[in-house]
Image 1 (cartoon, helix red, strand yellow):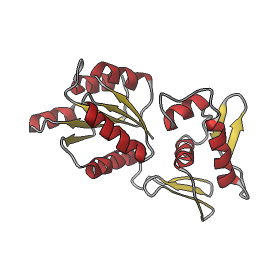
Image 2 (cartoon, rainbow, N blue to C red; image 1 turned 90 degrees about the vertical axis):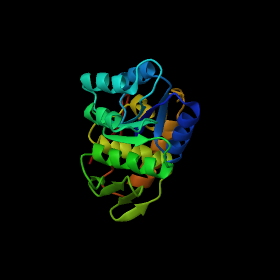
Image 3 (tube, one colour; image 1 turned 60 degrees about the vertical axis):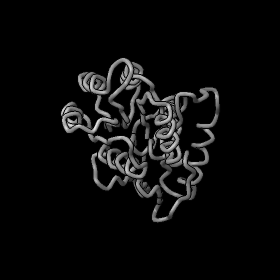
Image 4 (cartoon, rainbow, N blue to C red; image 1 turned 180 degrees about the horizontal axis):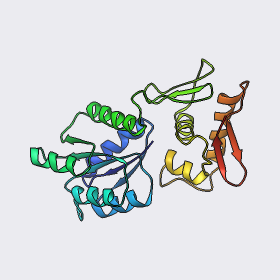
Length: 222
């Protein structure tokens, strides 16, 4: 899952980014409203963590222009403002949730998980294809009832492929979703990760689900 954090306070930005990365989310950070809006319009994110008080455009302006452009990522507004009218303004403007600083990271993470579950369009969040199942909340994977142990990256790749089952996913798109903007496009780490993932998920099972589309990328298809 890919998250954009738009936060100008360096300590808060580092704290949130580090915590989210430890939970194996792919995270980008923008330090002002203009950069945040540009990134949100140019790239696909599952969630925006959006501060209100920002240099340049404030969070309300970023949210308004994002929604006007038809972009619908989940948005968690994060701000020191605690007045009721500010919360109402953010929620009426299209925010999905609102958290006031200072906050407990456990609560912040719970809200992030809840919003990302809602982005699935289901309450359970369980992703399935044929006899393969993945639970984003417990971070467990089963194939034919057998529990499969995956690394954090392998899990993230499989989750992304499951969310886009039937689509051919390019290496670039996979890198953007699972790694981050500093990913080395000349690295073979994606191919290696998919190789190990295929060995764990498909070995000894029928049908093979993870397929390579030569010159295009990968597809998860029964």
